[in-house]
Length: 612
Image 1: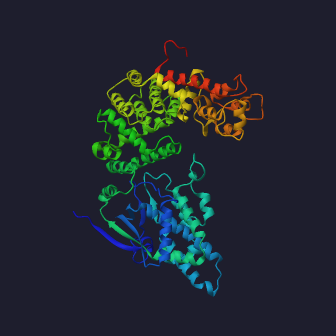
Image 2 (image 1 turned 180 degrees about the horizontal axis):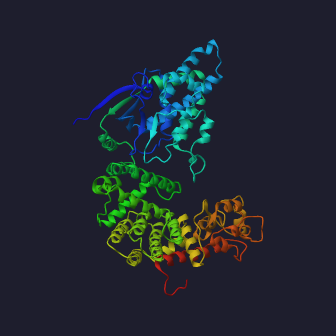
Image 3 (image 1 turned 135 degrees about the vertical axis):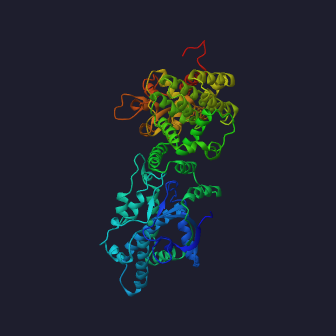
């Protein structure tokens, strides 16, 4: 049967309102269907371009401005947005910002002959906006304006059912607010995030438009409102075949529209779930909430977890091809049967999430995971595959594997080889396959150790650590190994950990310190970034001690000043009892040699003729 599709060119007012020529009928509302992506337009990107486009169009005084295409699936009282979700949502937020600005402008606009036409235009635009945003009758608009009918009691013409949208309720808070301050007071405050990141994209974009409109005078606001409502056009394509909606949604991605891997996968899972989608929607929203939280902590993202799941399935299915497909291709073409079992997919996905949440294994493994994070993000694939497939191994065995993986990624950080070389990526993909073939932890750890001893040189690694500057990843590794050596607990679950230079790298007193230590300028530059001069320190303490002399940083007798004595990190604590009052080149060289040996012994195992 041929698709039943209608297309028409409409001004914005006739897209949203129930006036003559609108696509809305009766109680219909614009609905973001469950399989749609989350709202991700940004105020400093897409919203800024949209705003500038409208202003440029106003300056040119053209007849109409074309905004693009919106594709809608018409079903009962819903207009399911197949394509154009980002624009429709943004238009709603822009209209609301304009609604509030018009109210504020009319409240202060003089009621005289000079302002008569502007006032008339603003009043007409306000009526049109109310008709666009709310399900109401024309005869009730005056009572809405007067406040007799409350905005909070009205139904909005927007409903977001996306399973990928965690904060959909913010739209109703914004659209039903009476003024900016009330809206700001009531919008969602995302826990665990800081400053502007605590706010949703919905509110940030609404605020962007509100702030822009505030800078306009009454004449320009009137002109802007008339332009937006009556001169901006979109092509509206309406489909009446509900069973084709997801296929159209997915096919749009082939035209280059920026759907994420998670968007595509969630749509496929949603389609293959049973007729009652409630269970899937609840589970997927939980997944979105948990992965958003992991992303906020910079641990992993939902798209990364999809990639990790691909590695797991490739291991389980013993797929040996070293050329990896894209995640999208893997789940929609190469292994599309995975999407036909949504219950198993969700169960597996939730287990992977639980791994990143630190559930089900020792705190020591989480510490290793945090050190690995500092080295290279590709460790995640093999870390997760192991903990997924060998989940029943003893906790100490899991720690052994995590440390073996850390050895390999430490070498990636220290040596000149990059991840794509045979020393790392190709080897690790092979190791991944061995997990699926039933290798035990002992097998895997032995395999990694053999690979390290065959492909890398102890002498060269030791030399590199002694002679070269090191980055933060190696400093984290050294701190971890020092804590282990001393039988102490290393807490990396802290915010704002910094790299401290014991001998200050930049200070107004640098020359005085250098001269006191009898170090030349060249020697100073050579030693300040060596491993022996870098430790972990809390930001608050690091800021407090500044670029002080070593004796002031370590002195335990100074009660009122923060210093190494206040740190939870083992090396800083150890330095408080260092016998020398100054920290110079000889001290750095000595500490560097100790740290280099500590790391080299960890990677290759201690040499038989050397003591730990």
